[in-house]
Amino acid sequence: MSSVFSNMFSASRLSEAMTGMASFSQSGAYNQEAFRYLLESESKRSERSGHFCQILLVYWTDAQGRIVPMDSHVAKTVMAALPRSLRETDYIGWYRDGRIVGAVLTVLVQESMAPVASHLQKRLAEVLQSELSIEARRRLQIRVHPHDGHEGIELGEKTIAVS
Image (cartoon, rainbow, N blue to C red; front, side, top):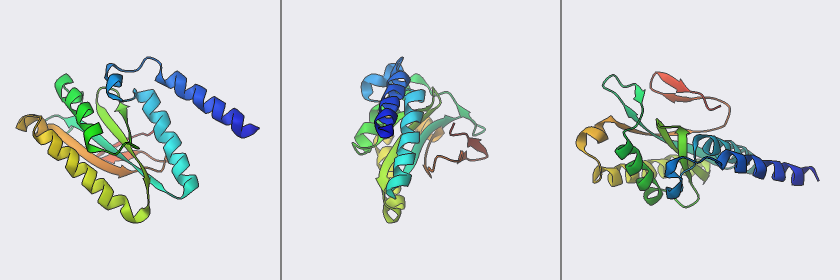
């Protein structure tokens, strides 16, 4: 009985998180609240199943390497490129609204984590190479991080808190 209640609560929480989606939702990307909920859920599911999940983050930096809001053209291009570069099982959305796009790379076994992440990262970079200017690509960072749901994600000298 408690799992039924838990599932209903989770579905209700996801529904609430998905209301007021960002304008990119037509491309299949989730807003920050819904994306964080899915990231947390996948992390818990991975822990229970013995599989792993990772998070791919795409962000734009200024000349000093600080994370800055994405130009709208860059954001739209990244959001359009991600579904073409990732697997159907991966979730795409805003990790940090307007600044960091994320993708939850789902159901990975320990041995395949690095090769899969590297392959997806390269494929995304290749897709973006033909769609963005050299300057935009120079400012764009694509990183893959393990995610266990308990700690922040290290981005250079900054840590981005998961919660």
